Length: 111
Image (cartoon, rainbow, N blue to C red):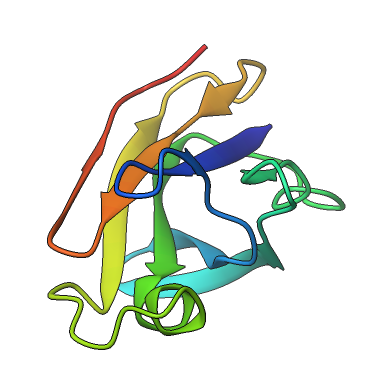
């Protein structure tokens, strides 16, 4: 299972409504696995529903431009965040949180 949680550090709370796309690399191409939007708590746990994880490289893409516009930020610096990571054991839970602000973002492997 791959999940995410987006927090807006500028507003001090969850980032609701952020569109997220999950893809897996096959050769030199990326193939869609799942898509969704964060809930009112900034969480998204359905990206891998109906998909069997296999070892490999996955990528999350977060639509930050639309989120920031919706919160009134007109000139955010990063229109999106793309995070590639390795899945070694498909039986594990991979939680990839994202902390955002209009001029920066950071991530880590969560629990």
